[in-house]
Image (tube, rainbow, N blue to C red; front, side, top):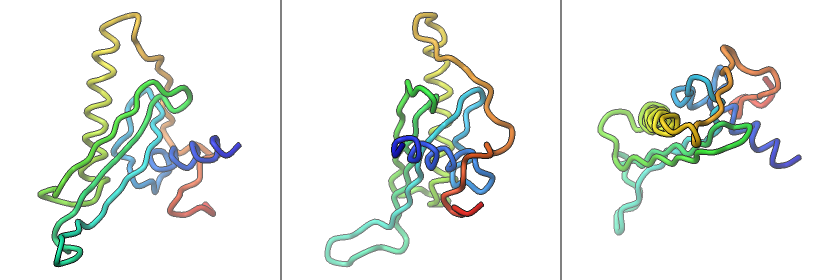
Length: 130
């Protein structure tokens, strides 16, 4: 019960209309994951308001995970939000991993149509009452 609730929360990150990582969606697969954005700590000076660390860690297919991918971006040059830095990289890496696995029939991932709109039982972490 707890594991399913956690998976539902991680799915809302990519599937809810106001999810923080809709840019990590992969066609044909349900992706579950979590974004992270943090200021970097500099010894002696404290947190630096201009240096960040962004991340996205996710798994797919969410129903029966076969790939777990973590993307960490140290001091991104443009936006520091994970939704614009790490999540799109996750998508590219996942698509490449799927293509490589698909080239070997014994390692292909089962596909399932991704929902075109948010799944009704997935609530957004940002707005848990939606």
